[in-house]
Picture 1 (cartoon, helix red, strand yellow):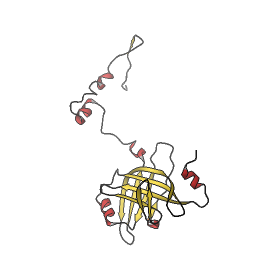
Picture 2 (cartoon, one colour; picture 1 turned 90 degrees about the vertical axis):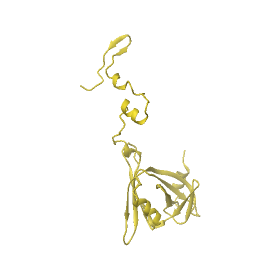
Picture 3 (cartoon, helix red, strand yellow; picture 1 turned 180 degrees about the vertical axis):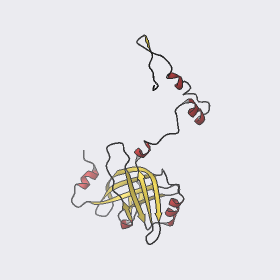
Picture 4 (tube, helix red, strand yellow; picture 1 turned 120 degrees about the vertical axis):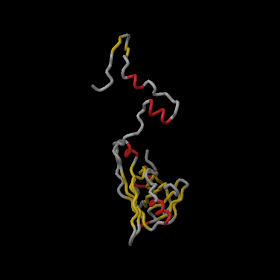
Length: 189
């Protein structure tokens, strides 16, 4: 089945834009790479035209992280303040690919990237800009977790909850299978 966006992309005269939503702690910034206001899924995105730039979005069928760079210049000072407060790490970022009709309004769209901010930088000088680096959910897969899924860790988070009370003992127990007692060494020797 062909999606509306695929149908639009098959045309010779397709007009495309990217719409971006970045949820900062205090404000949500919504902008798109065309001009004027654009309403998408009930949300209004402001056009930034050439003042915005989105890096290459790579398709990834595996489980390694995909990152994108989003650069915005000509922004409101409140947005710069959000970045300078350095509370941006882990904030949600969504990017849509949008086909526009003759009146530059959305006719079809699909989310092409969803992730979290991993870095943001403010550049000041001749041309002020904010560069946001975002990564998809696979960024966190290789990070070590503080939880140990043992009795002590569970009791620290939820006092009195003893769901993992016997977990450490299971490695020492005999396992009975088909009426025979068989000892399995579950620990590395």
